[in-house]
Image (tube, rainbow, N blue to C red; front, side):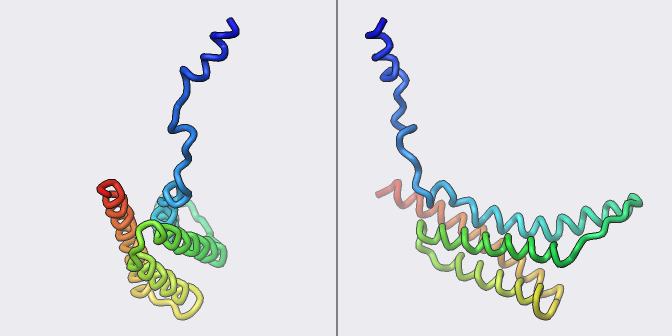
Length: 145
């Protein structure tokens, strides 16, 4: 009985359970996800409010809180893109993400322009797609070498 108890852990030994993925792989989704979440928060909330208005439900949104939530998502999106830059070493997605976030911050806290807001969010989505593709290409290069 004692011998069986000592051998049992070896039967269920999983070497993958002992190795943790590096943080750059575990959180590589962060920049892309928060970029898309920022866009969804902005336009999704506006769409939901418009839909509720059509049904006859009036919803008041505190614009200051709304802008601060989107700003926080922008900061996390840029930080996530900077985090994954270390993995793929392509500066393009990070630079585009910083430029798009800077433009959006200018639109929110400086001079509002709907056209610049659209350009900023499109830039953020493009940076997210570019970052995702750069991560995938870097993974392929690591597997080949």
